Image 1 (tube, rainbow, N blue to C red):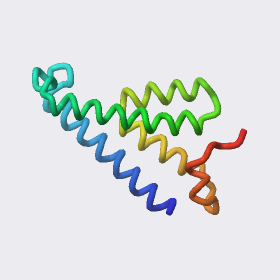
Image 2: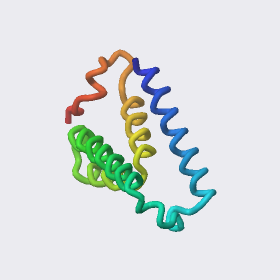
Image 3: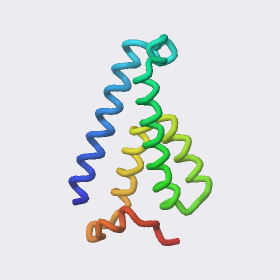
Image 4: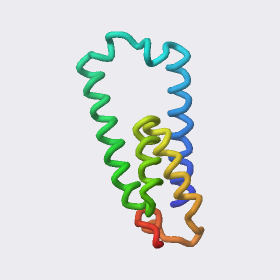
Length: 110
């Protein structure tokens, strides 16, 4: 299971970095123009940030220190799925090979 998750989130990270780089080379985000006001663009942004907040709730649950919670909040809101994939890969790297899947999801003990 751990290997499959590493592959999944490694692919998500690679895809997000690739598409973000591609889009940035096509047109900088600050030059995106009026298309950002399109109702579907707005709905997509709301959907994305709702997902970021949902993911952050799990991060806040797992992280024992307030400073780490705040740092991850900023990273997730700024980088979205890139930060989320990095967080999951970090958590998977910390997981011992014989740890059950629940250890990935549950709060670390102090």
